[in-house]
Image 1: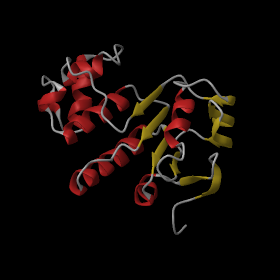
Image 2: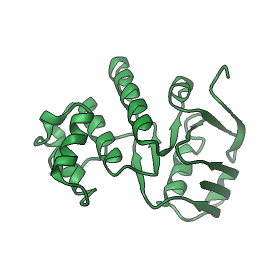
Image 3: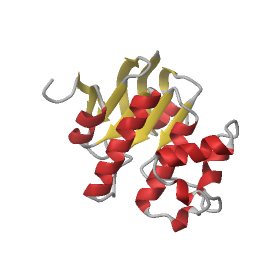
Image 4: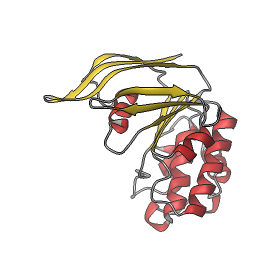
Length: 204
């Protein structure tokens, strides 16, 4: 089980988050919605442990992966190396199979700058799922994509989550993305931000 209990997060005198408390089971997909600037990405940094300056406690598995708003790839390494340097425990054959699964096996030797944005996003997904994470955290992973590419990425992400079954936290401002991927939704609102609503998909 994953437990998030953020009693207070502030930057200086400005309180950003307050009394955010929820749990997740293994294999569950949770979407966190809210307007831009509400503190969604700040909450993700707390959940992943990249920011530890807050009042509260978070219990999370060690085997985590993140997919960011930007692909955050190592530009001086090939697509294959971008996976293997993050996951030295897997073989090159396994890494190539992951690239095959996301549809860019033929790009294994290319550098990120030689890939389209959609291909870079596929590589970021491959890197995240290669280690079969227990917790997957996604921070608005479909922003700045055209409609067709975004649909392809949504479908691919949906399939990979179904195959790997990590606990997944998706931060988005899109109700449609939440409805597509998540079985449960938390809505943030207020200043400081807190949980203003919780439920299943729209219409459920």
